[in-house]
Image (cartoon, rainbow, N blue to C red):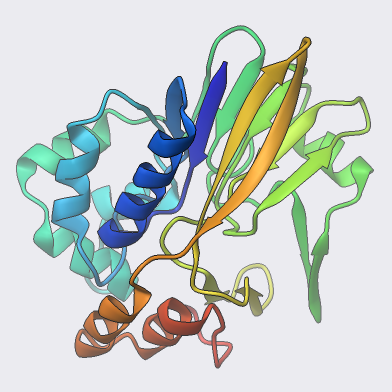
Length: 250
């Protein structure tokens, strides 16, 4: 069984198409989308249409929740733009998605953690840094989830970590956005340092899950100007370079 894990597409359809072409070339049996699929200044409607046509397993991320419950007065500009492009058909599809689930008998899937779509599972934000979470922190955040394989997204950081009990935890990174800034719980920046789209493949071999974290080049130069045209300069820099230049929330 070979499963492609994708997450945090953020409406970046060219990046998604490059990832799909790559995993089709490698051969996979199933695809799991861990959420945050549409929010952003790029192609939310077209991305939704593409995803709705697939037979993949889809989760909701925190941005799906924010799009559905949009308050224009305080909305994230990326959520606001995405919502403005979606019809009732796409919104109805988003409303069917859940933030957590299972896949088969030995895999748990979530956007953030099993208990929160906006929580980091494998990273800890401190006042001056973002660090890898300790085994004790990860164990506490899992809250008793005991299956052999856990897939999560949200942080845009590709990682493969073993829990203190030997579980494999995989974050495939972000398909569509390789850097962002946030203010919760402290101001911090996430950067991957290249514009390549990220995803993962997990494969069961001899009874054990084996991960591969994959970076795929795509025509990022075509999408960065679109973000700039729509007033999100931090997004444009992140899309172009994989870095972000300020501590403002993306």
